[in-house]
Amino acid sequence: MATKQVKFPDDFVWGAATASYQIEGAWDVDGKGLSIWDTFAHAPGKIKDGSTGDIACNHYFKWREDVSLMKKIGLHGYRFSIAWARILPDGLGKVNQDGLDFYDRLVDWLLDHDIDPYVTLYHWDLPQALQDKGGWVNRDTVQAFVDYAGIIADRLGDRVRHWITLNEPWVAAVLGYGLGEHAPGHKNLGEAIQVGHNLLLAHGLAVPVLRERSEPEAEVGISLSLSLGTPADDSSAAREATNRHDLFMNRWFLHPLFKGSYPEEMEPILGMMQLKREPEDAAVIAAPIDFLGVNYYIRHLVKDGDEFPPVNLQFVKNPEAKYTDMDWEVYPQGIRELLLEVSKEYKPTKIYITENGAAFADTLEEDRVHDTERVEYLRGYLAEVGKVIEQGVPVKGYFYWSLMDNFEWAWGYTKRFGLVYVDYDTQKRIVKDSGLLYKEIIALNSVE
Ligand code: IFM
Image (cartoon, rainbow, N blue to C red; front, top):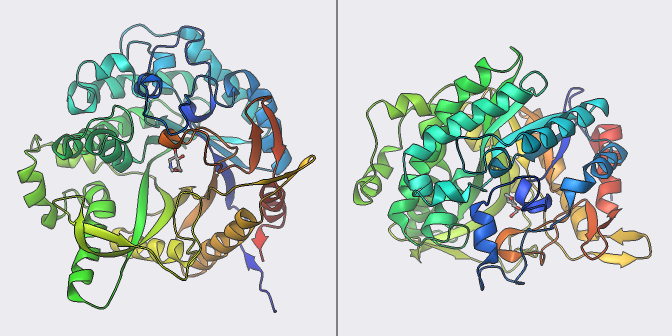
């Protein structure tokens, strides 16, 4: 069969991503405070395999080795997040210098290895002390986040050029406060709507702080989990449900960020959920950003149903398709279709794919890890990213999720997403076949 090379622009950024709670371990080391994920994972019955992130990939102690792995793969950029409770054990007030020193050393080491740090300030591990005062439902948490952002920028802003305020606020709000599947485990959709608003506000207020306290060329953005919806059948009910899916999954966050208001169709839901907001919030949230971070994993076949009331959706499985271990459909063209839609509607000037990847079981053979399905996934999705760039969408970089296998939240260690295999008993790392392929793709700056 004839194959085609899809080339990427010369300045394309090839990276990989991780998050603090998923890899660091050292949950109570060097003055770190508790986060909501420490509390949640320690509570019985919350995590599928009964595990916690107490040790995870032990990255807090193995960061030098992990940077060597990044270098071996040839990464240009590394996206990681900062554990807020390492810096401010109580969420605000007294700063823990040891926590700051950890990230300071990591940033220097990355730069010494020509790897550009892309720093996420919030990837879900809220200090427990703030949750005790209401967490993200409480508007005071917004100011606590902005103060925390200022502390980080004061320390790292002379070297970090890429800031991501929040990771996937939809997930933090809906899974954390709406459905109870993530920390802090609340089940109240009204809270989730309020949390979404407060997160957006925290983002909007942090943007100018990060800019002012970093070097002039620093860029600031946000990473949203966006998913594509396709009507499950030809009925108008399925088409309407798909529109509601887009509203709920994507436009709820995209619209206020890029257009300065919630989508009009969202207003009845916001009213029903008694959202508390101030008239000036909309302008704060719409603070211009330098890039949009897109985390893309899922295409849903949608029809009318009773999931996510009052949005009322049902997801249907595609009998023809292959699914990952997360039960997410493998549908490479979805990333292109989604990016085309977002770019047409919201016109971000710059996009980074800040996450994309797949969980599959790996086959270990001595010192090799064969992950044929991930190899295929990577080729398929990257080819579509290459094509969408040719179609004029300003995608400037791609960060595979994840650099290494890690703690997959409520799934514990049962799902492996990494380019690097982690043996959790010995903490040995092995670059998988997909990691070797990624190295080749980076070196050639093209995919077959
Ligand atoms: O592991 C997560 C990550 O923390 C956020 N985005 C999705 C990934 C896979 O579920």
